[in-house]
Length: 237
Image (cartoon, rainbow, N blue to C red; front, top):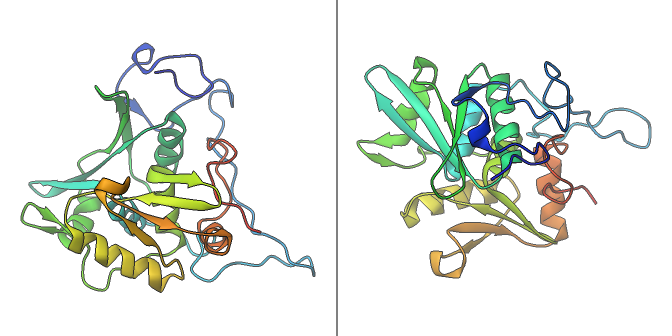
């Protein structure tokens, strides 16, 4: 499967590929993968930041919890941990590797047998606190009081958000309905009450239904990354 817009297949590139993943069709080698996001300006010309939005605060490793709210998986090995997430499109690889790099986390990617892409961090002590919060033995579940803010939602959307205009579907991971329920409560607290889609109805996933909720999602996750094709990212009404 070719990388979006590059004309190259993953097998034609040396693997694993480390940050950044170059895309000759969109930028020259050495240029940044995406422009810094610019907050929307109000009628007075002043910048307006959404409380708890992706554009407020500094990116941190704790934001990776957004990937675990979706299909991401964390694993421990000795005194280190690794996060892995499988995605269905090359643009998601570009966005995630860039976002992880902004948080000081080195990541690689490789194609999977089912024509998807696996994005993985290195085993590192940096992710151990995240693993400690989410793992109960071999079981992964959100910690008590789990919350979602704009930066976490941005990572989740980049990994597993699907536009079904005017709705957005945020795909989940795992098989435990209790895990999904905690994530759903965090969505509700962020002003994004979602409708749970069961596995036999195209899930597991939460549907953020309607333009009003999709606009709220857009406010939280910030501007569309350059690598994300038009129509894949929510926009503000």
